[in-house]
Length: 118
Length: 114
Image (cartoon, rainbow over all chains, first blue to last red; front, side, top):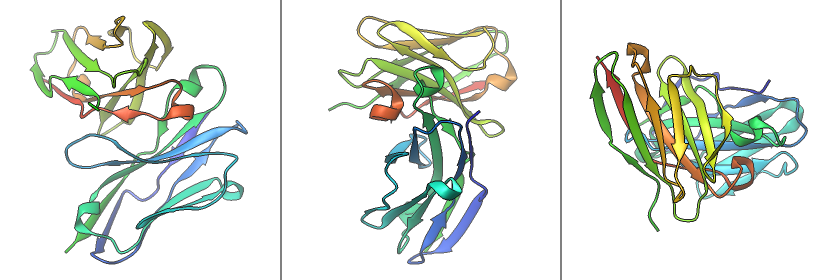
């Protein structure tokens, strides 16, 4: 069965600090997809990144970067020079690539509440 | 282009009543999925519809049902409401399977059962 673990429930940093959000996943599939979503207080889940299991290259998008390591089943997310607007709940999620039902849904971690203080 | 629209945004119902939530996906998206978010259980998958057919269903009781119309709009229905059904219900639309295309989520409907 697939599972996503975000061990950090809450993180608080001061503006301009770097912060890393951890995500560890479990799956028996060799082909799968990993996602990060941001949920601000408004409630909408905002897509940040999608990565398939064959692409282990790290990715950087502005102040955001992602470190995907299959050897440790981790897909960590780093925000560089954090800003107050980054305050939100961040979710890591997994979708398996099989043709059955698990390919058509996301399994989410429990989320990490990030608070960036001015 | 317009995003995913969920109506209503907020709803208060009494235990035992039933409720219908609506979701209009992004134009051209034929897949609509529903998720329930609660503080205790987190985000849990309810069901997914594609071209009016339910393709996948999560582990929820039969009181939770849904449907999709020919224009891809979807509704979910919860009958005989219980206090534990209080949650944020999120709808997500996609061109196809989430792994291939990802989801775009709506802002959700916050249901309170009293």
